[in-house]
Amino acid sequence: MSKTFTITALAALGATVGYAIYFDYQRRNNVSFRKTLKKNSKSYQKKLQKDKEQSKKQTLVLLRKRLEQALKEEPVLSDVAEKEQYFYKHITLGEQLSSVPNKEIDAAIEFYKALSTYPNPTSILNIYQKSVREDIYELVVMLIAIQPPQAVVNILGESSLQSSHGDDVE
Image (tube, rainbow, N blue to C red; front, side, top):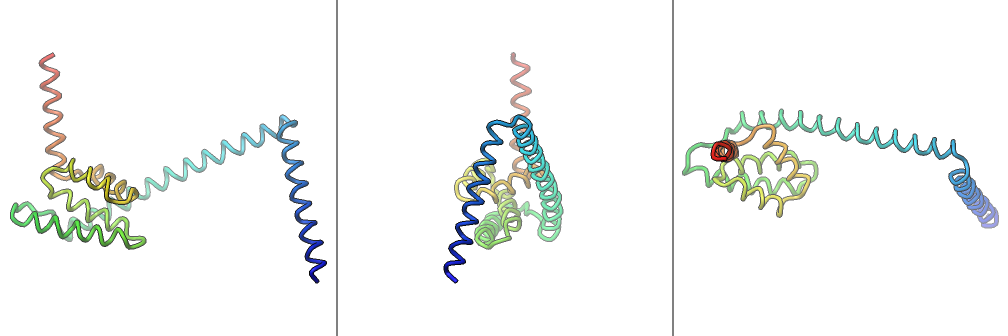
């Protein structure tokens, strides 16, 4: 029995090596074979790119729905005294959810809620970038792009005012 297994294994190995040699010969010497390989490679890359874009669009739609639902259930606070507790609550929830598999979107929403109450959103984004997993950080950035928190809007508004005043000076 071990003899037949050895013979079968050697035959399979020989066939694999033979095909590898044939493939390499065709790749080096047959122009149409190279063109076909190149064409297949390009179409595969295009398909991967298209799938990636489609996945990103679906993620954005899902994020938008989940964010709207989360903000309806628990709107962002405007009271200064309660903002600190709100911030710590959502940072803690975000950290807990980020360690749970398949809860990346929920964790990103919690980090987004904490960011929306933080007085200096650029510094908290830098902290997120260093301390939060990259996939969750990207989701937080997408959430900011979908619906910028008021603190981010204020900063963007100030920078656009400064740039417009700077244009007037020149």
